Image 1 (cartoon, rainbow, N blue to C red):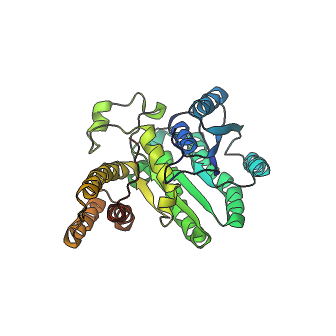
Image 2 (image 1 turned 90 degrees about the vertical axis):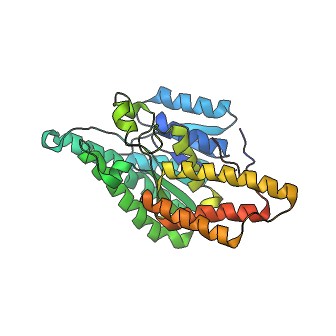
Image 3 (image 1 turned 180 degrees about the horizontal axis):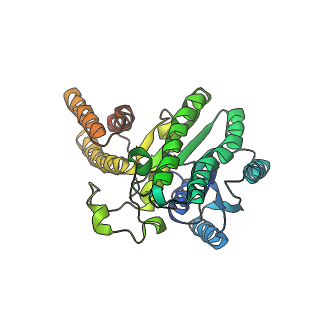
Length: 319
């Protein structure tokens, strides 16, 4: 475990909802690896939460399991109050708790509609509201909401899930505007098809044909995207919805730049020419358009790379 990287979160406190398994577990482990004390929230799977915490501690990290139901406002308020009493702050909130109850709308039970929206959207409200109050007093915070590509494009058989995740995207962008002047960023990560319990049983052939990379993503790749959005490197990024495939592409390019920087140190030569930099930014805009991403966000990341190359510094990107 490396807690001394340039983007480490030493002495920060994080709360990750729905962290007993899958993406939430990976996020909790990633933040702990970067130096956070992580509160591992769970609703019913205590053993899963204890397993997550054990993995964190085995890797040298710190944390604590915390049971509460995100759909219950009183439970959420009390949980946040308990953290503040113990640690005095919450620097990072990751709203990951979510469920699916799929089916065609014409056959969907009313309880399936309400249950999914209650956890996926109302849960965000119940937890985020008390956390934001604390962040405002500290004038610092990082909030990351785990949404879905279903919330961006819609998915047949998931009208309830798509609606909840689309609502979460709207809430992310609106809250980002409310909090930006107070040094609090609010972003979302939209995983596509990720290898997890939620995608077990789905047709691999049908899924892979829809993915440019021709493979499913991993929970660790989603966690790395969240880690970036919680780091000092993303201090100027807010109100964005990040497709994890984009960050994977950027990570590969960052490795390429690191190799070039290494050559620069050897030969003491400038790496980028202004014309080449312009070409790079143009390519970034094309990439953004292809994946329906906002160009300014991707340009921000690439300019970090370019700045690294000029100063001879590289930042590690985990695989």
